[in-house]
Image (cartoon, rainbow, N blue to C red; front, side):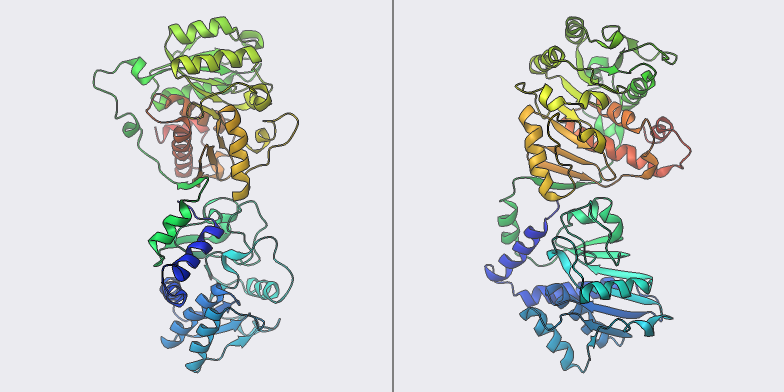
Length: 501
């Protein structure tokens, strides 16, 4: 589960104001746990520099400074409140000053004394409350000066100051963290690229929030936010099969696609489907021009040749050959879909529970093309990358899911036609009615032609398992990403796949 920034703040407020858990107790706990966390990053002779803002994030930082001072560590703490602080933060400042510890004021030359020291910087300036760009001022100057020191360790409380907890496509912070401690549950910024790279190693640490407060806030959600890193074994996904299973139990699947010169894409998808465990894979190429040698593992059909799909032949094949899942679009530059084709396959879905994956060219203008039809979002999946996402609609651009506020309208637009989607980016996101699944096992070794075809084929091959397509998409993406991370950059996508299947 992920929390939004507003959910985290409301859980904190309800725990204190409604359910009787003193906010100072929560702050004390957060500061103590950050202290222990920071000690694990400390090396002998390192010097701690604590940056304390004027909010409760700064209060947490002041608690850290107090424990460091009590334990006789070498520590300085800079007060960035500029005379404005919360009551809780003021209490922690006074507690620290009672022990004879003097807070330092920040000026642009304040950090010059640290140039030859190994530093552990504790960033407690802004926390999760920031929305929008960081404005010029004392905090910005402090962050720039701290970054110029190039500290070996930066521990961010909640998240690096200047980042929005609910966004992932945003400018890099002035001071990136090597380590981040997150209280309660992780936030989107911690798990989704590119923002997550600026958080470093992230640790989720529970606090004594009221369980009633958490339940009350989560119950108001319209979208469930899930972070998934699951990479199940292939054998476990097929464990439901009886010992006397046959190829139709594993599933006959069909892949249609391949423009002239791009038939290899649909063949790679078909190979991935076979490797994923499909019982029978059929391929209907849309061209034979520059086609590679046909693989003997598959059967080949001709009802999609010359760029037009024969809907009567398609229907007869799917019904008579007991096809469980259809992939359409791999290796196509323009849409292979027509209104009659969509009508045919939506009817087949209703009759046979046919699972359908739309990929590549089949994504262009699919939302207006499918208007008035109703697919089943559990059985229908779109697989756009950012460029293809922009082509889903003809007349208006559907906003890319770059932050939490983008998710609900994107899901609502997809849901009108009964679609789920996996948005393929540095951190892919599965979008389906009532749910968003953040997948953070992306790897730059997947930035190669063919990786998307392999992913579509994996989803196709696993379609006969007893899971919805959006669940299969999450599993397939994490399997492919994990495989790519195990190998060097010289392997092709299919060679990578061999390492995990």
